[in-house]
Length: 363
Length: 211
Ligand SMILES: Nc1ncnc2c1ncn2[C@@H]1O[C@H](COP(=O)(O)OP(=O)(O)OP(=O)(O)O)[C@@H](O)[C@H]1O
Ligand SMILES: [Mg+2]
Image (tube, rainbow over all chains, first blue to last red; front, side):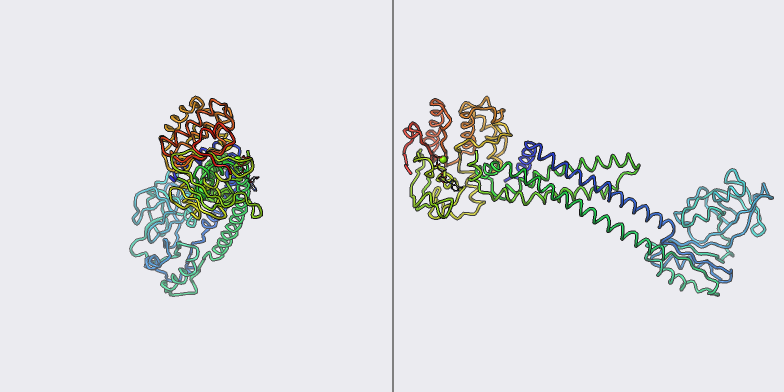
């Protein structure tokens, strides 16, 4: 018994029973289509909700010196950066006002010195900074009335400063867009706030405690902390709920598809009983009969799953603008093919164990 | 050589059909099994063809006991050493005639290319070569019977079991089939067992066994 010949025979048999094959393929295609267009969309929705919650700062911690008397120093940034569970940390010095040198009567914007490396949430367009040079955020640029992100600004505390480029920050640092950023002079070591992003939402509590411990503030009453433990809890709840709902739907749709496909294969097997009697007489063993029916169903299910998945993906992309998640779609297609093949096993066993003589006698 | 000894069988416990039969079918001979309708001629062929298992007794093919063999071994013997011609042709109506003839090769591992080549030879020999690409629904009953004979001869079996192989044939074509069976027995040293009512067939066989 050569598996390839059996597979070829299975394909020929499937082709010689077009109605049964098309019905099985349609059932599998429908299973894939239903799951992709319902649960697939739920999965997509869950990803979006979670992304929004994450953008809102599920993983962020802000430690600030509310009175200006906590005495938080720049070396705290390095120490927090070394804590496990920390993705990045940045320290910000006090804010001071500057105005455009070309328009001293205009509105002021704040300039802040940052300590540590800029995280990927801050996109910089300009040369590397040094004291006395600044990058301007998009809102600050508008406030100052700068047409291009170049020019001079003046302030009472910083004196003259050159704007050499621009930056744009995303959540959780989007508030920086209202300011200018510069690097501190060596003697500027005081921080007003420290912003931390943890690797996972569940790291927030531990990292907060550890950060406070390494901080050792002079005046603990002046330290304010904002974390997102509530958001993390909401996030966990959303993830669990949507996940459970989706799993239940997938299970139900697969079960219904499995029963329908099994009945269809059973129908096809019983209407062609004589075939199996003849095959047995010509030397097919029982396992070969089972393999033949399973392979036939597998081939047809594979066809149905491919058509169903590709077709639904195409339609969903057209209608919603976003294609379904490819990993999810592939997983569902594989699951549907396997489930249908398994559903073919009981009818296959019926075919293999039926008395060949009895079926051969029926003309 | 096929030897049966003390063979008993019935489809129902209450209704024995074959009781304590013993017989030898030597290699190189054509044996006719005859008897009234319903006596169990087809049943005997199914037993020798390993499609049924006897209640009691032994069936040996070339000294090998087949009673009690597991399904896999029986299927293998069926596929490689036994050729069946059924009372009706039992062809697959959805496949072409040549596909029908080569079907057994799928189960025995013969390559399709070799099987098709041999199938065409056999079909030319029995006058159905021109019908190779037709469906069984498009050939006559006698042609279907000959196609079934080609299918039985495809794997070059040692034992040929033919159930009323000339039932649907005119005298001339029946003679072609009988000659083929005789030739298979005499020049290719096969054991041929034919169930038949036809006196002409019986006359052409080497031995006649009346059930
Ligand atoms: N599945 C079955 N259950 C019960 N009895 C059966 C079954 N199959 C066949 N029989 C009976 O077994 C007996 C032998 O049948 P068989 O087909 O072997 O006869 P036969 O000698 O070939 O007859 P014919 O010359 O008409 O072909 C018959 O009486 C038939 O009715
Ligand atoms: Mg009969």
